[in-house]
Image (cartoon, rainbow, N blue to C red):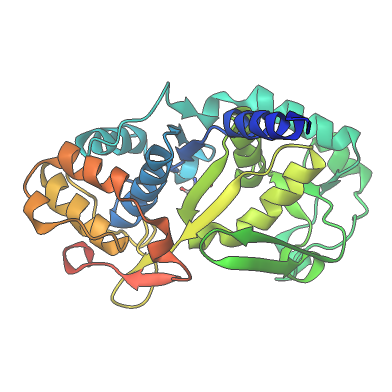
Length: 314
Ligand code: GLU
């Protein structure tokens, strides 16, 4: 008689794979201004993808750079998410409270010889990427006046994005030795995002395509630190009339809590979902319930940008 073992083994393998890969997604805004239509799209897409997969959805405020931040923004962002009924799991994490963890990550990288101190000025780099370890004069070291850079190495690196296909760059030509701790003190976005994605066990990252070239830097860090690499989906960005990305920097219109029904509808259409017209005035909870059940990330396949709908243009 044939042994049933392979079947059993297969059965257990699929169970353990399923439990090990429970979906955890996140939305990670920098509080540089109130939420606008462009950032709502990243929030909504990451939320729908997580909930469609019965996953958790975390919110992390990336408040690493106080001079660029608006002290009201974190609160405004959370209030708007709440008004849209985009409810997150667990406590909101604030990167400003995570310095000790980032320091430990830096020390691990120093210990592994993956980073080096660098006092090169922008002027010295003259618009070029940093390539290769520099000679740091002793007086810089004594003054603590240097950045830490990740030594990038040579060759190509790439990854498969769920929406944008294979994305590849040359380490020396396109990336260069990048900063993980700035000379003037703050932690870099790259180091903090990698440390927190790993610490929070993030399995899926859904965010704007404007961050796709950061992904390769992040993956270099994840590999060096032996962290798991999440799956990435980079959604298109919303464009202004002049073709520029809708962003806080170009003062995109702040979303208002009392118009959330219309804006949520517009955001779903923009994400190429097709909510049935009869749901239009049924309230955010009902609309979101439909959107979770019918979420179709693939509708955004290969799209890099899309004009923002008229009410969100200046
Ligand atoms: N904090 C970043 C931003 O607001 C996004 C980080 C991410 O999603 O990885 O642009």
